Image (cartoon, rainbow, N blue to C red; front, side, top):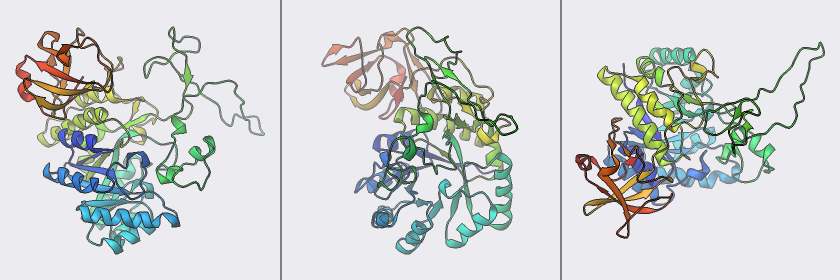
Length: 437
């Protein structure tokens, strides 16, 4: 058994600090080159070098995404991104397009290349092709089922020793084939050739996750009279996962439906099995998600992988935390018997709010903090510290107070800065970048 690398997403400098604090073995990010999260290219210019230095100081690797499908006029930007990654000392490039692959081999021959899931690698011959061209790793297509991953790992061990395999293990699923989608163009009036406005160039509008409201249904029928397709409604009202029949919505909450939106993937139950197969890396999706989301998900997966290494794997413990960061129902996707079935063992009680406070720096006897969500500082349940290792000690209301300009705060809102004063032994365990819920 080999413990897979925990590969976390990073969209900006705050997310990078969060990923490293909560246990990333490696991070992937966007910089100057075109990548599939155009809004998360937070390390352009000198920012990439600083990010690589910070990650290496923490013992983590940095992989730079140039995984878009560029047009001819985009190639100068591709070359700029490759050279930037090499100069910054990155640990690898994530590439999907064969032309980008060829440029990377010519411009940065010593830089390892990882084949993106966008390349749709689903068979051992494709892995062999990429290895022969100089790649060191392939992130398997998201459409691979469990037995396909097992077969590919066996073929790799037999015929391609040393070649690494990466599996997408947690995050948003896609209605298209590994992200090759034109719904953004069709549904948002984007020109097909408009620069940077298509999914393959990192600007997907995610119309499969829009909120739709049914006005009428037309059911298509085959010539012999059999149903060709039907629309299934899932009424969502109030908090995520609260599904009710039409007309049964809570007061003040207008219902809407999800026709296309897939559930989020979570392979926490399969983590030990993937380690036994010899999967080298588990990728967590979310470069455009908040650093608070990253803290919860990264910490839960770090705890799971450490448990596998120590022989104390507790997937239910990690799953109990992961559900608090879920914006969609969690499923096992193609790794389960039914891709739409909610993951077993999931607590269906309403999730807790996302982390509300981020520690910035120690200030005398207190901590400068940033408020991430609206909350009452004097709420009866107190504050829960998100300490690495999935430790969740609770601060009772009498043990802390929030101040601003020397005055006690009785309400806090997103974006505000405040001073957090603590009267608790737990104060010794605090450090910059930690989150509080």
